[in-house]
Image (cartoon, helix red, strand yellow):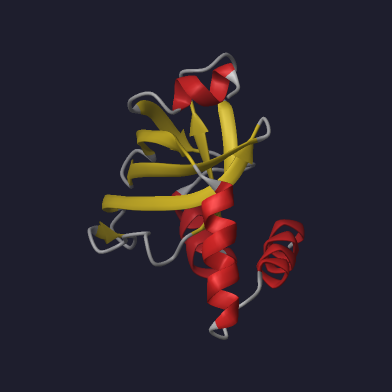
Length: 139
């Protein structure tokens, strides 16, 4: 595992909402319309800004009030960092757009096996899921 990936997978780290123009409005739009957010790990040299496709089932917005800019959100999503498949977890305070986050290594082989058994029961195949993920990245 890459040194940066390993470091970000050890304990919680300070994060902030990243991306080209981080703001509460942009964050809400990215969550609602795009399904893709940027989370920046601020404790690395220059910061590490990672884009993730939201796992909507694991993301929790129930403690957030976007109208008032208060509360917290919990976001999760998969990505590959320096060839290492990981899952990003972050809790963000809407008042400051700061919070804490970490990475967890993913077992892609186990996910592929689960995907293969899902496709036998009528769910999307691994190829369809990859094509869908690629389409989301280019959007």
